[in-house]
Image (cartoon, rainbow, N blue to C red; front, side):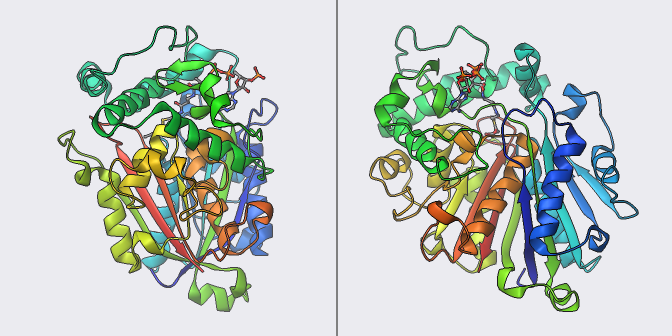
Length: 412
Ligand SMILES: CC(=O)CC(=O)SCCNC(=O)CCNC(=O)[C@H](O)C(C)(C)COP(=O)(O)OP(=O)(O)OC[C@H]1O[C@@H](n2cnc3c(N)ncnc32)[C@H](O)[C@@H]1OP(=O)(O)O
């Protein structure tokens, strides 16, 4: 992987963009990435487009990438559409890397765009219902609910309003973790407070409101033990990255001092496993592979963007990534080790919980943040001396773990 670079990144602010369609959001992110790379759109040689829900929300089932890119004058290049649930953006990034590695071209665009917000909430939340094998829905639900057994759910700790089915999934993961390792609701709140406090410094974040741990605990309940600011919101947005080979860096006279090297890009599916076999979690296996490819270990990582679809997601994944022992994910957040300035800063962007989660764009927004950090251009949220960065982005659900695990390691 040593000869692949990210030369430009761009993203829209994440949030509710009822006034902007897919084409407009895509254009904003791609134009920002082109400007960042000091490149022209005519220099793009291939594009990989991540999106999940437009078929459901806008009736545009097919060729979404070609339609969005052609509207901004990008055509006559290979364009491939990628749907890999909430990991679609990182999957687009991985395919752009493979394309360049194969020698098929020297410059590739990875872009993810998603429009999710709707005033029709039931329809909006139903988008998530097919992010697992619907023919096994009952079986999967049953095995998930068993995970949360033996933890009593306090009265009034579930919202009467509709919400995404994934919040029940993460609540079951959380209750299982509480039962097995003694993780507390306060530790979940520490993760969420940390991420919301980071987002105050990110102008592209959907929410930029600081919270104390007690304020997170006192927020409206969604499904025990999750309260509202522990959950990722519904978001619209787009994010893009331009990748190139070392050869193109020289040929196109691009600014090598701002190029960030891709050390590993891994995509892996999950499989059935025993609940207590943590080491076989698909993210843990994908991380091992990525560390091997990059020739580094967890202790070498300076900063990470981790898939906190809820605060519980960050706890599980920080353990799978080897940033702490299994069971210690909540403890390290409570100790401040995952805050900016801590031992292993996680989600300096604000994470999905605060920056937002327009699912097809999320993985590329993680890359946007890490490239900004590695260049030393993150302003008041800069992680000091950031040299190696890791992004973890998960998608869908099969059995008791994600259907897709994507790990990217970048270096300066
Ligand atoms: C493997 C994987 O992990 C794959 C995945 O990624 S799965 C995750 C996919 N994404 C999801 O499932 C989405 C989850 N989110 C939800 O279900 C809902 O957004 C929610 C339950 C968190 C909130 O829904 P809701 O109760 O209808 O809240 P909503 O009406 O949007 O907002 C209420 C208020 O809270 C605010 N708010 C919403 N989310 C917020 C957040 N994360 N942080 C701070 N404030 C938030 C809103 O701005 C709003 O404020 P105002 O009243 O001042 O306008």
